[in-house]
Image (tube, rainbow, N blue to C red):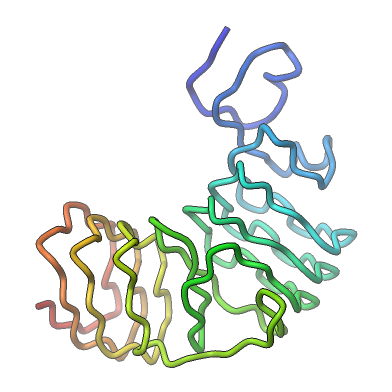
Length: 216
């Protein structure tokens, strides 16, 4: 029997059902362990929260979403890889991961003073963890966010993509982009000018909240 709806755990698989979209929950992780099964498509919010025995983790390319505070306070986590398959990253994904010093990113796009941008066609980002030193085997080289030119390969700006990029003053949205995610420019307090193409067909909620911006 094939189910098309989203299941919250792996129990259906154990019962002989075939699941198309399996979310790995904190309960699943405590039952099945820290190695993410190949059937899993997304990690639920807080999935690895307080998992102090976790020192490194390989996120398989089957995963497309990392939930809110997914690795919150994993104090022993030192390294992680983020595959190009990721199209959504919840806020504070690596909150208080104080030992996290190295990240490998399959499709790195840009490193600003505040955030690391990655992947295509959906551009996603994470806040730079406090003690991070190495990205893809090299020392972090942060750049002015105003130098970031969004590639034409991007078709969507993910939720919270430019969250609290406090030095961002202006940005050009290329015509390749058709969607802008929720809270995309949240608290970009210096953002005054944005060029938005007529190609945009979908705006998320609160895209420009706490922003005094002039849209061109």
